[in-house]
Image 1 (tube, one colour):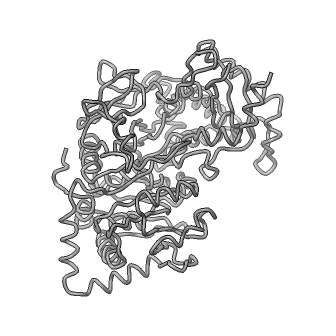
Image 2 (spheres, helix red, strand yellow; image 1 turned 90 degrees about the vertical axis):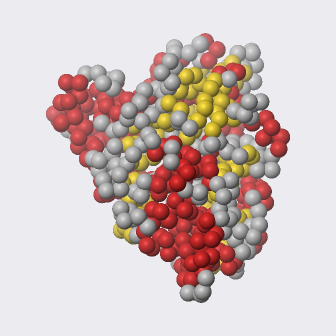
Image 3 (cartoon, rainbow, N blue to C red; image 1 turned 180 degrees about the horizontal axis):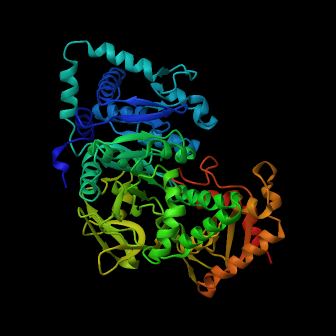
Amino acid sequence: MQMSQFHSIPAMFLDMCRSKDFPGWFRRVDGSWEEYSGKRLEELLFFASLAFAKYGVGEGKSLGIIASTSPNWIVADLACEVCHAPTVPLFPNISEEHFQFQCDDSEIGFLAVDNVDVLDAGIRKHMARFRYIICFDDHAKLPVNGIYWKSLLKEGEILSREYGTQEWFKYKIDTIKRSHLFSVIYTSGSTGCPKGVELSHRNMLSMVGSLESMIDPKPETDAGLSVLPVAHVFERMVICFYMRKHLKVYFADSPKNIGVIAHEVHPTIGTFVPRILEKFADVITSREYRLTGAKRMLVHRAIRFAKKNIPGHGKMRRAIYDKLVYVKIREALGGKFKWIISGSSALNKTVYRFLVNIGFPIFEGYGLTECCPVISVNVPQANRMGSVGKPLESLEVKIGEKHEILVKGMSVFQGYRNMPDMNRAAWTEDGFFRTGDQGFLDKDGFLFLTGRIKEIFKTSTGKYVSPVPIELELVRHPLIDAAMIEANNRKFVSALLFIGYDEAMRILGKRRADFNAEEACQNPEILETLQAYVDAVNRKFNRWEQIKKWTLVAEPLAVESGMMTPTFKLRRGAVEKRFHDQIEKMYLE
């Protein structure tokens, strides 16, 4: 671990900027790539830091950011850190109540946005509370207290000509302590008050140092693809790792453009959440239906083999399919990936097997915001299917009561902001953080997840039901885009099944323009197919865990509707509220 080389994240960033081997960062704008060289990035940080200090960032007031992932997001974040204040990332789909709470709790005095007008109305009406609102989009309409990012940088550039500013900049960075907070990140929960996770420079530098010893990309041969929201600690950590490795990074303009971008820039490393990989697998599968004749038969057999074959088995057949089919699929995504890291939630085993058999190097990991965030990860030299890898060497991981995963180490957070009671309950007497997740370590030290303590339902008959394993089995079918189990205080298990549009269109022979999801949810063939599949899933579980009733839902889950987190996790409370009537109907006599 090499944390000791740097005392802060801005210091690590400047090391990257000044390195001769740093190829630069690239941001996709309107189909073209805008370059950010090391010199430009350092200037942007210098100018932004001066302007932030002028306007009062750091004087007891922090910076909140609601914006898309870009180098400008990173620079604004780092400039706030230079001013010795933590950045507070916010998500665009945040509720008005949670927005107000987080702004009050973290004393956010400044807000950076792409465009105020695209924010929800409930958030827009609170814009007057901020000293200044910084708009990254220089075509956006400015609020009364607004300033364009370009204008702010220009002010910083003018200030930079004054005597002593370079010394001030160096002093501010040199006096950042590892114990200082670099960010307060609010964990997204389905109900209740958000928890502000306080993360220090020590936490992040320790995390980056740990990963360095496990994954070693080179600036001259490797490039990262940034797709996920940098407001999430997973991608924030990944960007810091790229900084340390001086990597070229391509910032995507939208997750929807992953295929086009990857084919264009040939990345070697990327981080994704399972839902993106699952969608990608669906796209690959759907392509066979566009073919005809012998070619369709070949692709069909290759895809079926990839879905069912255990990785490492059937080497001769796989070699044939690889030469004729799989290599073309990989080339469509640039053909250069060495590391595809999947995190945030469990990846469906069928999807994992399918993508690995095609030749994509998928490595699952596990972490929490409180652990900045990685706890364990599979890597090429130590990879076990079904596990989330071995714990980082810098962490001490053990299994406690109720099979709870307990963690201790320098990357574990300092505490929840302004929540003393919760902090007392978050740690064991011997200093281990209680993750709330359940799992076990096998004889070789690989960590396996089995459930979440708070996500174990108790039926009205006194039986315990863990919903996640059932939901993971359900979404293996392409007709099921997402699933949510209902069982807590209920007399039996039920399920909401969200229809998979692509597979439904294929079965019905419809194009998207002609497709009606509501009608599809009533189609006898689709309902019979799903009932047969639910019956098959039920046979894998105890009788009290089996689904007695289910409802097919036409409305897709989305981040924008608040029913999914920004990393595509189900918000149970929001889904239960939205589909309350459908759920209750299943329990009527």
